[in-house]
Image 1: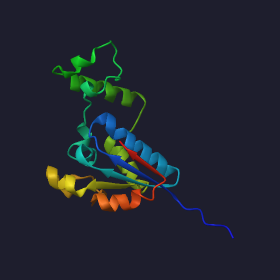
Image 2: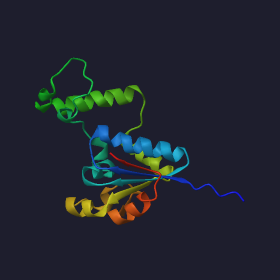
Image 3: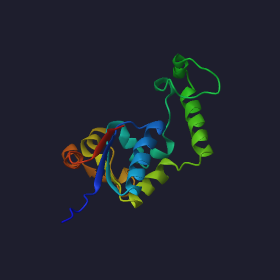
Length: 161
């Protein structure tokens, strides 16, 4: 008697809402789904911005928190706090993304949803920040930690981004 192969599961927590931190959970989630893995991404704290349709098209990169960020000229990390550095870093990253033809964050969200990746907004975070369900991309679910953990505790892989 052969045992039926159980589908693999991946649980991802997305807690940061910057452009550079939006790509990893969405790319890993969509790639795992393409590899026939059941995926759920739990967006909490600032990660909510990734699935907030009012914000996800204008996510930025903060250079002060990214000392390894590539630059055309060597710039000490401390200069990242100067006015205009965040827009400059964001523009640089968007240029790099465009150069390699990556999808935008809203496009990646749609790809995840089409591949049946469950995108879950943390209900206490929504309550705390005043973000409404209608502010989120269509297809995003709302749930608390217990519901996500029920899935994550049985996952083959759990990631915190």
